Image 1 (cartoon, one colour):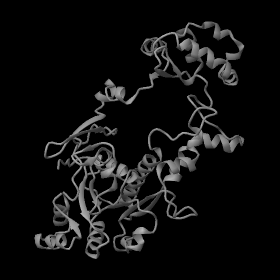
Image 2: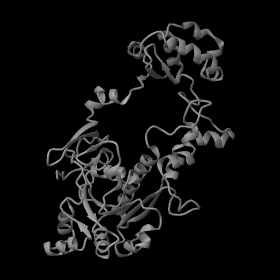
Image 3: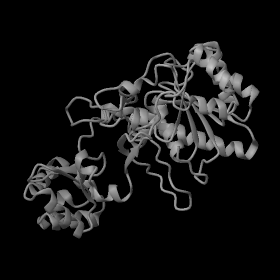
Length: 404
């Protein structure tokens, strides 16, 4: 595998026990930063290897998009010999990350408390739906469940319509991002004092934190916000509008200067002397009168005609791109946000790229996700110093899968 020695996290080893989305997304962030990720899978593999509908060489595209730059070790933790190996790998790592339901690993005799007694510098990060304690601790959680319980879904959708799940799995991805931030903070603390930490990340907590000003508005006013639709709670000209060709564009005219420029660009300077629209306060109070006027004006031209006119007036504007347009967008391509990964046997897959750009660090690795068990033998030999005979015995006992 391609490696770079001067990436920000070079020299840090992570034992990745996570599956599905939140955990693998977090460890891919660490992998992109240069950490050595030992992705440990059960003999049947991470379940997302089999998620339909799209596959490349037998692996789901879902799996391929969040597991680059990792090594793959296949061990049966339910076998005593397999569990013993995992414990040794944990003690040989800087970080352990897992997203099992609370209590599952403890019942196997594998826990942060026990491992950190042997290695106080170890950082252990658990990701779960609701956290390691509390009344919801044992409830199963999926992205949409957490989006619903957090209140986020109550804000999403058109006014008067049904609540809508966010188009991206923000419950999973948010937890993955917070997990990556947390382990980096723990690494910094370890560098200062030599001690690790035990981190408890709850998907629900992360979504509650992301309620941000909406939660603050409610706690200040007591008013329960409804669906936010296409607009903004506070700024009526921060919204999407449909152009003549049916393509939607968004504008964020959030200052008085931008409002005046918007009226000029749309050819309706008479709005500037209308007392209903004299300031953002009046425009917000009279948004139900303002919006139909804006909608009618935007229907006069195609989306691509409006963009240069609005940009000339220095009004922030953008097309609501469909994914086919995003993946061809010149800025996306220029920033290397579409990657083509190629495996050792020539299999290729296109995925989104790493958004973190470092000017001084070394070249970024772009390793194709590994086959199940492809690196088991190399990791057990290189990290734990097992002999070929010992590895062969583990294969015979079905405690591991080696060779991919």
